[in-house]
Every structure is written in C-alpha cells, then in structure tokens.
View (spheres, rainbow, N blue to C red):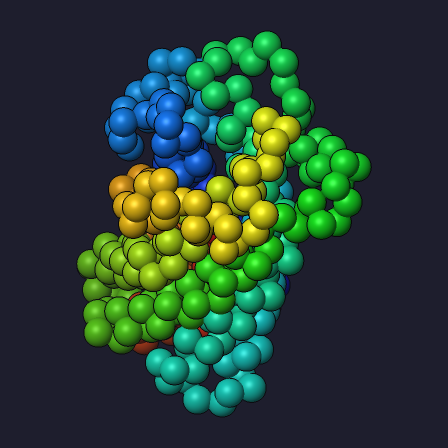
Amino acid sequence: MALDFVAGCIGGAAGVLVGHPFDTVKVRLQVQSVDKPLYRGTFHCFQSIVRQESMFGLYKGIGSPMMGLTFINAIVFGVQGNTMRLLGQDTPLNQFLAGAAAGAIQCVICCPMELAKTRMQMQGTGEKKSKKKLYKNSLDCLVRIYNKEGMRGINRGMVSTFIRETPGFGVYFLAYDMLTRSLGCEPEDPYMIPKLLFAGGMSGIASWISTYPVDVIKSRLQADGVGGVNQYSGIMDCMRQSWQKEGWRVFTRGLTSTLLRAFPVNATTFATVTLFLMYMRGDVGGLKECEPAPHTMQQQAQPSSL
C-alpha cells in the first residue's frame, strides 16, 4: 500500500508538470467573457499567454495541484483498492463503481485545490508582471477566501466537482480496465511501454469527454467573484445564463486544450506509476497483463483534475 501511495504521488507530479500549461489555457477559455473575448481559440490563447505573460504565465496556480496530489492519490488509491476488495470480483461494472467511489470521496481535497488553481490562473491575465496581486500563492489564496467567505467560500463549486468526479473516475477505470484487457501485453513485450502510454492516455480522454460540460460550469462558478461581483447564484443559474448568451457551444469551450492535455498527462502518470511499482518490487516478470498485480489495482488520479 505504501508503494502505491509513493508511486501515485510521483506519477501524479509528473502528470501535472506535463499538463498544467494546457490546463491554464482551458480555464482561460472557459471563463472568458463572451462580450469581450480575449482569445479566439486554443492556440491563440496559448500564444497570447506566452507573449503577454511569458512562459511562467502557463504555470500559474501550479502550486495548488502539486500540494494536493499527495492527498488526492492517497484517497483514490485507498478507496478504489478497498472498494474492489469489498466487491470481490474484478468486473467492468465493479471497476466503474470503485472508481466512482474514489472520485466522490477525493472531492474533499480536489475542490479547494482547483478553486485556488483557478483563481491563480485568472490572476494578472494579460500582464507580464501583475501590478497588484490579490494572491501571493495558492495557500494565500485559500486563506484569503476563507477569511472573507468562510468554509462555504473554500468549497465553492463542490457540488459541480462531485457531479464531475464521480462518473468521471468511474469512466476512467472502466476504460482503463477494458483497454488493458484488450491489449493483453506481457512484460517481455517490447511494446509494453507504448501500450501502457496508450491505455492511460485514451482512458483519460474518455473520462474528460464524459463529464466535460460539468467542468465548464465548475470553472465558471469557481472563477465567479474574482472581480468583486458575483454573476451566478448557483449551478442552474450558471447553466441558464451560459446557454442563453452562448448557446450549446459554451459547454465545449476549452475542450481542444483539455484533450491535448489529457492524453500526455494520463499516459505519463499511468506509465510512471506502473514502471515505478515494477522497479521497486523487482518483479518485472510477475505481471501478466498491462495492469499491476491484482492487490494494488493500479490507478492514477485525473488532474481534476480529469
């Protein structure tokens, strides 16, 4: 169990470093004003951030997911593994249910983490050096929100996070289980690592596509009030206003950058975790499939953080 925990932390950190720039682009596109849009699309947003804010602009808010990954992976690994043991049989349905349970419980850490990340990513938009920084870092962001709004402010977007993470993790583990079974690679297979990368990457993409509209609403709710004025009163109000102003396409905003991010992030995380476990156990020949030994039920967290 300790090895699973360490492996998950290492794999998750690798995934964050690879995918955070695309996540910044995603959030900027999701929450930008339809009346005064700053970006025309994914690549224009990417170029604008680099040009106006330097490369460091793409890594705004990275401290929050880096801090939260340890707890998120610990929760996901523990809950998913224990749930599978309780269910008894390794079936696709049980994989979905165990993943959904893990996704639901880790929202306790995921929601505040993504709130701080979103607020940091929105800070100083279009400025290379912000003239006035509201937040010094992710921790300072959470402290200030707590002092101003209490626990309710810290948990802004909790319901939408729960709605996204619960089926999202279920779909991820279901897709992963189906892909690893169909690929059926052996440790001696020279293509084992590419297969691991492919299985992890495609599972991440499937997970994000299944819940992406909810992620748009979550990002808008968590970014709401940054300028001092709250635009939305809740999930349904956010959906209604977004639909009326922008139509159905609003629920696909930032999807391109999300999918560009999803494959390398999940591929990197999954392959890193699996290879780390194989190395630490010194049991390369003991794995009969792409997935690790049954008692570990190899997983990785969605860089909500799908």
